[in-house]
Image (cartoon, rainbow, N blue to C red):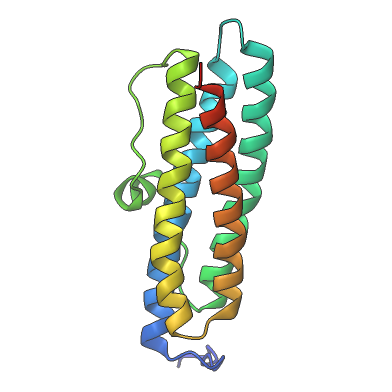
Length: 160
């Protein structure tokens, strides 16, 4: 006997699953970017060490909080949130490097990573908006603001 209650939040099951599937991609991108940012925090060297070390820590702290919010939204929609490296690597559009890049390349790769999360979030926003899923739209809007601002700030470090 199934004792689970059905979910009746005003979004039909198929749309909830589509939104959760999209959010799973946002979660995977966010977690991959979190791991990359933390790796760079640990391993950055060079004349900008202090600035980048502190900046990367601020960024990965934000990403750590974000993954929880995104996963909890997937659960609120009645779906299972992905939570393994295997699933994240399958779902994420952000690729990992095999070596530790130099500081300038770290910055460039983090710009790309933040822009990737923003693009994925925008795609999912359309699905959520079409289903009148305001909480997901709100979450994605907040994440878009963070990723666009972070990309801008990192990009400014690359100007000569």
